[in-house]
Image (cartoon, rainbow, N blue to C red; front, side, top):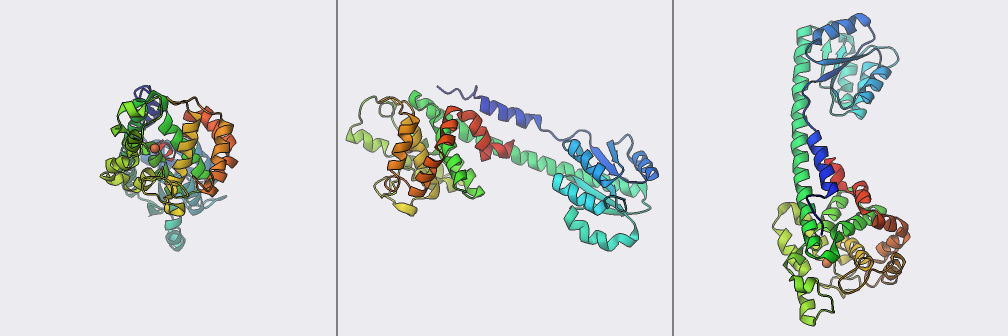
Length: 367
Ligand SMILES: [Fe+2]
């Protein structure tokens, strides 16, 4: 039985989140080629913040890369040899878009600066010779903005983590209902996202397919254990009850707004390309994209797992079965792709947790 509390995957996600925190002490990177200016700037901020310095843009970029998790704000001179301040901040913005950027510049450069404001995501420019108090005030406002953005993104991250852990726990609880389906939801989800990526599914679909995969059998929670775990063949009546699970799943998740978009993938994962599936006998491309993907992943995992009524089939036999059902049970293009990537699927089957962390969109979003 899968123990959610001891799930190493969930633990590692939690550690990552709790390790993230708003910075107690801010680090400022100051970039200026004139040593006297550098000294003056350092004196302006001494005791208030941790200061890093660089004497040109290239050195500044290196320092930024080396201290990317510490630096909250950059103060850069504009007129510098090797690389002008606007160019440096433009490059810095690619490396660290969330870091606040302030430019020190002469009055004659105003037009260039105005043009560069958007490219650099410049927070503010200060005219030289600068007034230390004005610069201190700008830095303080910039750091307030940085802290606000950090706390917003932490809250968003926490919400995403809560959503993800809840979905994953529900899937694990379902898998635990039947010892023969241990890890089924996670593996089906894993094969689904691998196939979706190989089919170049748009990125917004990947998160949806992952959530639908985790919840695809959630309606089985309402199926009696005696039917779910029956060793022999199901009677017609029992099979009818079993076949109710996609509609049960729809009823369970349709009331949750955040899950509306995953309903089609969940409800229709037992439809067949030839129209002989259930619950709605949809055919061909009328079957939602996510459902066609999950159908292949679900069948492959069912075949390659030991069930109460039979032993697991070999990977090669399962792949041959998927191939022979292309255009009948499965979308022929998707089934063909699944057969083409069978080596990758086999590797994922042998090491599902590592592959999950590598392929999961939800996991990467909260990392
Ligand atoms: Fe199912």
